[in-house]
Amino acid sequence: MTIDPYNAFLHLAAQPGTGGPVVGVKDVIDVAGMPTTAASRILDRLPEQDADCVGKLRAAGATIAGKLNTHEFAFGALTNSPHFGPALNPWSTAHSCGGSSGGSGAAVAAGLVDVALGTDTAGSIRIPSAFCGVTGIRPSAGLVSTAGVFPTAPTLDTVGPLARSAAECRQILETLAGRSLDPPARDLRIGVVTSLFEGADPGVAAACEAALRDLPGRLEPVTIPLHEEIGTITQLIMLPEATAVHLPWLRTRLADYGADVRARLLAGLFLPQTAHATGLRARGWVRDQYERALGGYDVLVAPAMPITAPRLDAVPPDYRLLVMPYNSPAALLGLPVVVAPSGFVDGLPVGLALTGRRGEDGVPLALAQALQERTDWHLRSPVDSGPANRLYTRPQQLRSEGEVNH
Amino acid sequence: MSESSAIERLREAAAEQGVSPTNEDLEATVDFVARILPALEEIERRLPPETPA
Image (cartoon, rainbow over all chains, first blue to last red; front, top):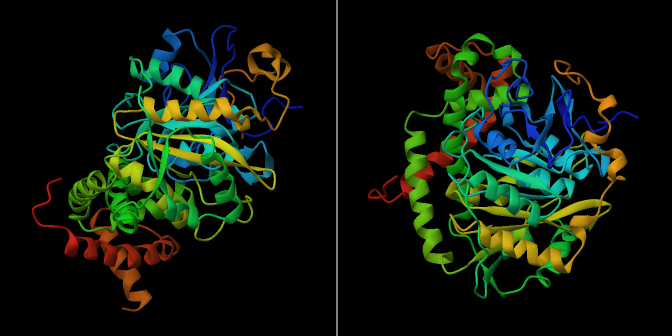
C-alpha cells in the first residue's frame, strides 16, 4: 500500500518529525528547502525561507509533512493538473476532491495530516472542504499574511486551514493571525440564503436544511443583493490580476500551461484595460448594497456547493458557472467563511457554508463549533485514519526530499 | 461578428501584448470573452458614477 494513494502530496519531507500537529502545505506556499511548483511545469523554485504562515506554524511546534497537490497555479476548482495528475477524493477515488486546494482536502480527509494549509481566491478552500468532508475556513481578507505565497489574484488571495474540526481550524487560524478569535457573547442572527438552497441539488439542499436545525440562533430567509452580478464583478478583478502575474510566461512559455489555465489566463488578456478599475468600483457598489441588506446578520448560511463532488470523468460542462454564485460573494467582499461537514448524499460529503462579517472570523467559527458539538459529520472518515496510517509514524515509507510524486 | 473574425481580433490583441496563442487556444477563449464583455458593459451602464473603488 502506498502511503498516499490519493496523490494528495507532490512532495514529502524526508523526516517529518514526531512532534506537534502534522501540517501539509499547498504547493503554492513556500516551505524552506522544498520545491514550490504550483503543480505546474513552469514554476520550479527552491525557497530558502518559509512563507510567513508556515513559519508561524513551525514556530508554534508544527511538523511540516510536505507539499500538497493543487489545481495548476491554484487557478481552477478541480485539482487535476495535467503535469502531476489529479488529487483523488478519499470518499471515492473516481470523484474529484475539488480545488484548487484539493490535495489539502484529500490529505485531511484521509488522515494523512492533522491540518492542511490552503489558499482561497474564489472558493479554493471552501470547495475541497465541502467535497472531501472536512472543515475549512477562508479567513477575512488580510487576516493572514500571504508573504511567500505564489499569487493567484493578489487582492483576492487568502490563506487558511483545513482540518477535521472547527476547533482545530480556530487554533490554527489564531496562530496564523497572531491573535485570539473570541466567540461572540450574544445570540446570533442568522440569514438563510434561500436562493442557494433552491439552486442546489435536492439531496444537498436537504442535508444542509437538516443541519440548520442544529444551529443556535434566530434564522431568517435573506437574499444577497446583486447576486447575479457578483460573479462577473469578481472575474473583472481576478482575471486581469492573474494575467498580469503570468504575462512574462504567457509570452515565453504559453504551451507549458494546461489547456484550461491557459484559456483563462488568455481571457484576462482580452478584457479592456478599464475592466479591473470597473471591477473595483463595482465591488464598492456591491459592498454598499450588501451592508444595507445584510449588515444586521451575524452569519449567512447556505450549501457550500450546489452538488457533491463530480466524477473526474464527468465534470459538468457548466461546473465553473455552478461554482460562482456559491463562492464569489465572500471572495469579492473579503468575508470569512467556514465550511462544516453537514451530511452525505450517495456516500459523498456535503458542506454547509457559514459566512461572517469581515474581521469577525470568530463568529462563524463559533457557530461551526456549536454545530459540531451537536452532530458528528466532521468525525466521519473514509479510511482508517488511526495512528497506523499517520505519516509521521511511518517515516520508512516516505519518499526522500527531491522526489516528486507523478 | 463571425467566430473567425472574433478569433482574428483576439489574435491581434494577444500579439500587441507579445503573446502568440494557437487557434486552439483562441477557440477555447472566444466564447468566454463573448459572454463577459456584454456583462462588463451592463455593469458599466448600471454602476452609479459616483461609486468609489
